[in-house]
Image (cartoon, rainbow, N blue to C red):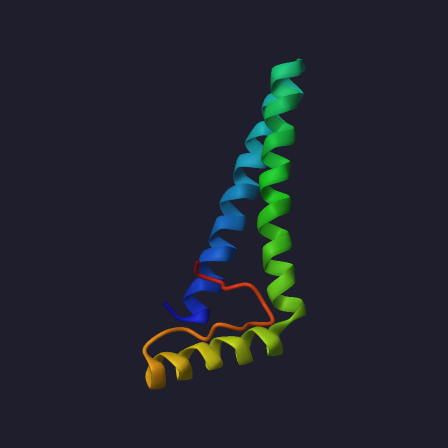
Length: 92
């Protein structure tokens, strides 16, 4: 899977999380109780997780690209991914 495909998946996952958080917020507005509040908090935590992952990649574009290139070259020449990276793998 390419970096571009992985980034598109991250964006798609974040968009789905936004929709779920919005649904939870509407439910909280219409039915204010502890369960609705907990559901809203859970959806916001999920959204925060997706956005943080995206922001981390966008803040370190060059480093991520070099690490992915190093992995690709290592796979070509040695048959396995590079052992050392400066960033976490995008598609674990």
